[in-house]
Length: 108
Image (cartoon, rainbow, N blue to C red; front, side, top):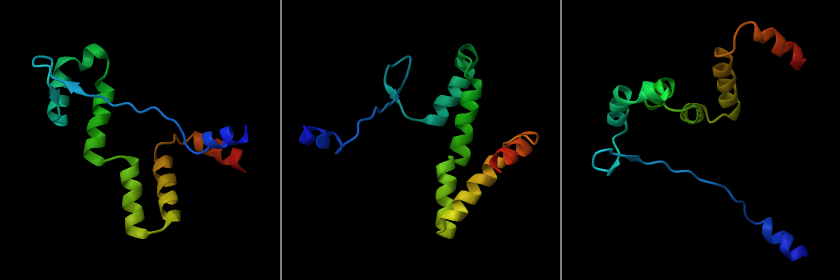
């Protein structure tokens, strides 16, 4: 029984999703993200209620992700504390002012 349980500790399982964009006319895969998004913005974004999602995608394409920003800070400083400080700073920029005193009181 011990051999069986140790076998299961040697690996983990996960699920991976992969999405493809298909041209509605030719049914071929599409790969030009900004072109697809520009078309989608005029075709079905509002019908699907996806305008905010599309705008967020544009933001990611323009600025990169939080992970990209963390890597930039790491490359500039080679300091994990600087990366964490940057994450805290970015998080606090998005926290409403009335929440900060409550959060600080809970932390102490």
